[in-house]
Length: 373
Image 1 (tube, helix red, strand yellow):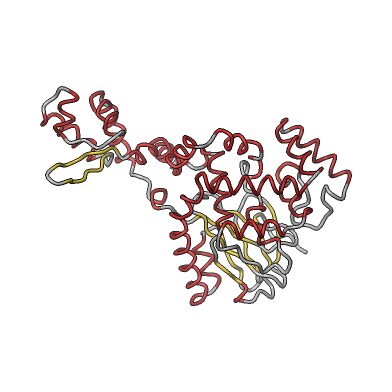
Image 2: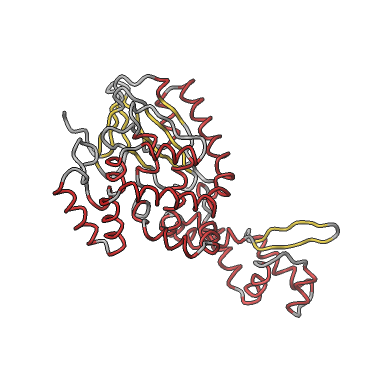
């Protein structure tokens, strides 16, 4: 086969239109949530959410999160897209996390181990090959590479290779506990946005065809109709084919800016794409940014923010607390409001002001984007 440049290529020869599905996956989104929690720097737009979840995490759960974080930290393990590994290569994600965990249980031990060791053990990915459960050389190499990553990873890898079912039960329990602790709440909010996006893309598929649907997924994804090939522009090489199976498009809300392609040998290819979150799509102008930073840098306004971040206050309450006149406080509130840092609501005859903490939490990343734009 001739080489077709950089990127990930999916050969779709023989792919039937009804085998292309745009679907949402709670398990994939839980994987992205874990990634964002362990690599918050990749996801400045989620800073407020990450901070909130982390503050409430039970220490025991936080500890277990560190134990296996290589499954989602560097990048994102295929185990979170378990449906793609099922025989026949046409399975869809489950409608609930419980159904998805049942699909994860259906993977063979070999598939599970290969998926779990993907980033650390450099196993053959998009070509056929034996895995560490059946190949003694690969097993030794997996343990050596795990040891180089530190004691936690070595321990996990030893346990995984010695007793896959035990590790699988551990992971399942961990994911259920995450669901209870923070994910169920996030999913109930995110799934509507994701489902709406999936409906939109499905309409495009039906009425405009695969090319248009892929363009709407990302400008980095292109379809070569003649060659029956999808190309995803990424720094990396990979190839996959739909064969007699299907193609899955799965939106993520927490995944921005990552656009991922599952192209594991023998699995159904998956495009896991970010749904543009509005606050990230429209960063503030440089002028707006300067306004915000100036507004916050004044000592009186900084002290006011200390109160406004904790609760909503009326102008006269603030005047009392700060020993200033109402007009002086109003002037400072005006500056904060013009910079878009304050929300105001009316309750009866009172007007209450509060700091918009999500905007403040984004300032650092907005600034970075501004100077790097």
